[in-house]
Image 1 (tube, rainbow, N blue to C red):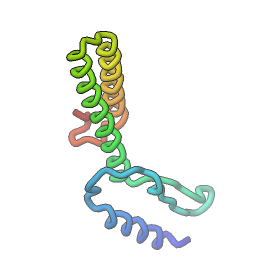
Image 2 (image 1 turned 90 degrees about the vertical axis):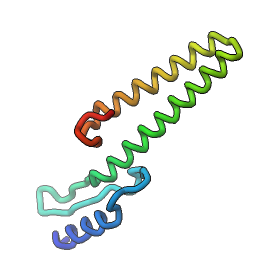
Image 3 (image 1 turned 45 degrees about the horizontal axis):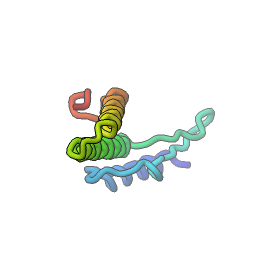
Amino acid sequence: MDNRKNRGALEKEKKAFPSMSGNKLLKGKEMVMVGANPLSEFRFFLADNVKSAVQGLLQEIENKIKEAEKDIETEKKEGDSEMVIGYKFRKTAFEEMKDLVRKWFPDIFEGGEGK
């Protein structure tokens, strides 16, 4: 395949997702560049697509943290200390997941480390 066609496809993809408004899944976003031997195929994702997917993941984790916080408050009012402990554990686990995502994808966030 002609490399000019690949560059044109890449430019179309960039134009199709200029600001990546709204987070999107990576499914179906894999791109393929065909080149000369020995590298006949090179598969990749555009950085904006990865950034959007990671931000979506972080938002879902944040939603789970807020959900656990609400459950903690509900169970505190009802006086069920065992459930409070369980929801606190759940909240802590989601906070740790969020920290790990930010650790392993620091380039996704402005200025390096995610906040």
